[in-house]
Length: 308
Image 1 (cartoon, one colour):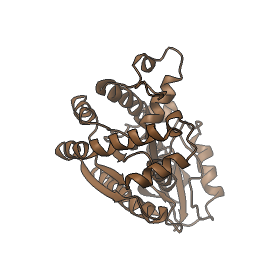
Image 2 (image 1 turned 180 degrees about the vertical axis):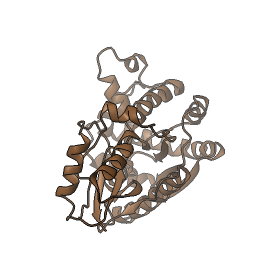
Image 3 (image 1 turned 45 degrees about the vertical axis):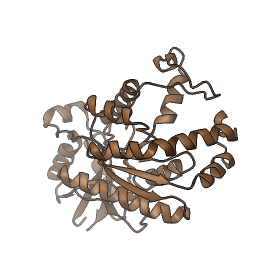
Image 4 (image 1 turned 60 degrees about the vertical axis):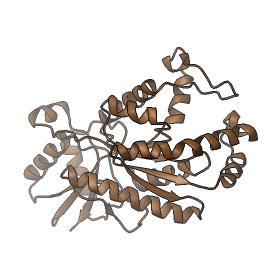
């Protein structure tokens, strides 16, 4: 069948258990094709995992994306998620609202602002605990690249993050816009949040964020986080291109530090994958499947095939 290479990529979510024989059959069936996206999610059997030592899980990559309401954090986070399938987008606000809707959740026990906002106000240590539990659970599912949206919000959050020995963030992307642009954007969107429909509440949130942002960014910088300022008062495509470039650099730096391969983009520059190392295939199935078994036992859950 000629020489064949595998590009292993970390995939999100649970995957059905596949036998090595069925995996190899899949590879043979697709040997003549160019694969531009993951073809399957793979997981070694329990026996396979016990037969070979597992690789040490690297410390996860944390990227903060910050900015006032209306700056485009959600839009840019969605673009990053689409560009890097191995990235997990974790919105702090969405996480709090989700937990608040669970009957009996400990998150619901905290007070609210009292101005019509439906979300509880968590103290800094509780906020970090909630995020930490979520990230820890995700890392257990091989989710190692995290985009934390809308957190930290205060200097107290930064201090609590460090005190809890959370993985240090590699960088913080801060999106900025003039206040009048922010107000117009928030009032014009349909988020479903009650406080997005009241101009006075929108202005209050934006003013508070702008007022506190410089102290927050200084606290982050003092803690060792690289601050990347992005002018979000531009065409969304221009902002997207700059944000993608910064995120790609952060991911590549992290992967290099972990001893993994750099990011690879295929024909579509907006469709990038976070791969592991190239593994050369062998002409005989016994050697080839053994290499495949070892890789899966180390936690590989997806693959890309490419004819050499």
